[in-house]
Every structure is written in structure tokens, then in C-alpha cells.
Image 1 (cartoon, rainbow, N blue to C red):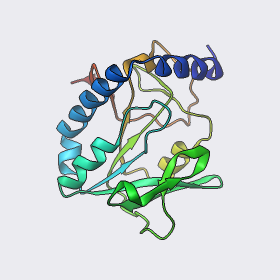
Image 2: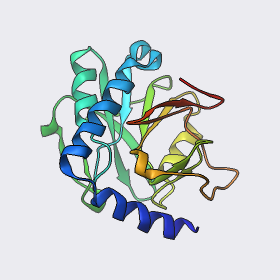
Image 3: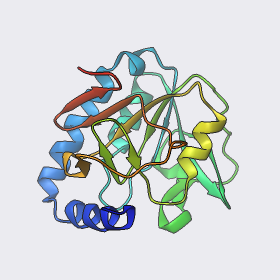
Length: 187
């Protein structure tokens, strides 16, 4: 399958999830994230803002803030993406493609050793990732190689194999509602 075909298929799969199943799966994924040693050790969490039936991330961000962690979310500017600290949903406004982004004027996150929660359209068991096609996450991670990467997805986004390029950055940890997978082994 091509990336375009996979993107279309996954969009249909996610849109067909019943709201209660989507919510329950997101809650399970959130509990897995918060159980990770990487989460417990992190002072800063870089996290995407969910959009269009992605795994819900606000509960993770809210929990992180309650746990005394700083939370940063992405804002796109042209071909670049940077992360900015937030403390509440009120810090967000519609941005790139209607995705909520941090408002202008918030402090830019510059930590190099933080937990990095990333989205994706589709994944395989070897942690290859099909993104949305903009390359924002690969470019950002290439510039910030010390970030500990964790991808979040529903099981319906998993494939036996997905197309990938050698330069694509694979997340170290992949979490679905079924469990936690680490490169090189499963928890």
C-alpha cells in the first residue's frame, strides 16, 4: 500500500470509532504513558495537541501539570515547528490546518532531554511511522536527538508493514490501547 492509501484508510478507521471506544482507548493509552519510567523521570513533556480523532492528549497534559511537569505543545511556522509552554487549554488557539496551537507570546521550550509524545497516521510493529506528509516531526527530531520519543496511536492505526524511508525517525516507544512496545522488545 502507498502512504496515500494508508492515510485514507486510517482516516476512515478513526472516524468510524464509536465515541465511547475512542474515549476508553485514549484513557488506557494515557494510563500507559503515565506508567512509563520516561514519564516519571521527565520534568518536561513535549506533546502534540490531538486533532481529527487522534488519541486524546489533553488528559495526559493535564495529568503531567498536576504531577508538577512543564508541558509544551507545537506551533507551526512555515516549514518549521517549535514547542511552547502552556498551563491551560486557554493558552491554545486555532492554528495550522485548524489544529490548536499555543498563542503567540508564550515561552519557547528549549529542553533537549524531555519526553516527546508524537502522533502519526500509521505504524508497524518495527515502529516505522507514516505521518501526515509535512515532515514536521522528522525535521524537529533530527535537530533534537536527545528527546525520548513515544508515539501514541489506536490499534486500528497499526499495520503489518508501512512504507518508510531510511531517514525517517522511529519512536523508541509505541503505545496503543493494547499495550506498550519498545524498539527491540515488548513490555
